[in-house]
Image (cartoon, rainbow, N blue to C red; front, side, top):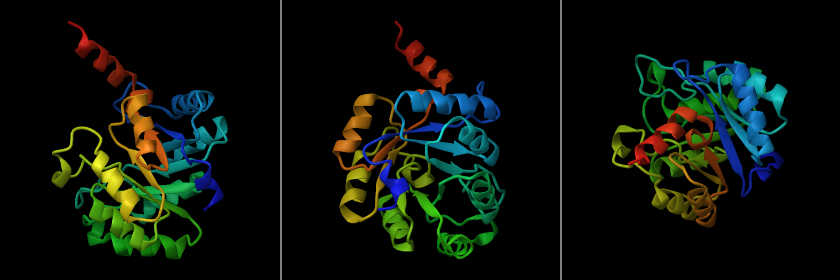
Length: 226
């Protein structure tokens, strides 16, 4: 197992991301968020955009899973959709590249197979994490040679929109039917659920909103008030 991936085993990866419309948007803030996550015991950081990755690397020495969220008119895919975003993440110094590994068509009509082949040709030694939404997509991504699979997109593709909470069955099936590390991510909103994911076989757990989006945390408290 790669030593960087080894550092994730059984641990918590914190997703430090804030989009432009959010109150905590800004690279300096994300650097501070990453430092807070490290002090709390995180074993890695998931970060969006090259500028945020650069700032986070100044703040912590933890491994970084990097991505770029970018919308294109001709595709539903927005997590590192093209080689251009891969280039940005690698220039910023991320340790692992995360990208949408669903079977949907990418910008310019590119398939997931063509995308992975292009990335591997340009960056043959780069670690890759495929974000998927179904078991079939996970198996396909594993066959393409990604180094890790994440359940990030379950509930966020049109054909998995019925899932409004973390899909434990998907995690269990991926663990049983692939032989690469499976990272649990997506709607993991309590420490108890994170711990259960590890018990179910997840190599590591990624938590974002429940830790780094105070507007969402506040909303959950308000909704519980009588």
